[in-house]
Length: 109
Image (cartoon, rainbow, N blue to C red; front, side):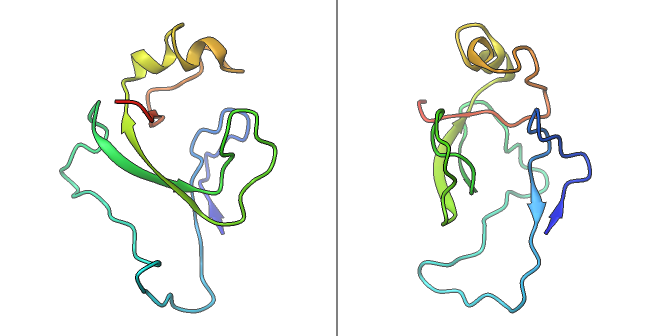
């Protein structure tokens, strides 16, 4: 596993990594490659629907991490909305620390 060189475990900035596999993946109806946007596509357009995946916590007060990769269809929200007092910024353990390079999503449109 190769972690992003600028990963910060406190702020979760750059929380992404690459996995090296011991053998090739066999694709089937349940295992498929990830879909990536075209290089010129604005994937972070507010309101856009997208899929996210990971092994992170599945709830705000969760303590256990899932054993299987999780996926979820979410909508992109603006940085201003997410960092405002009416949203994540009000309850965050790091208020005001939501940076503009973080991708912010919501389950509600």
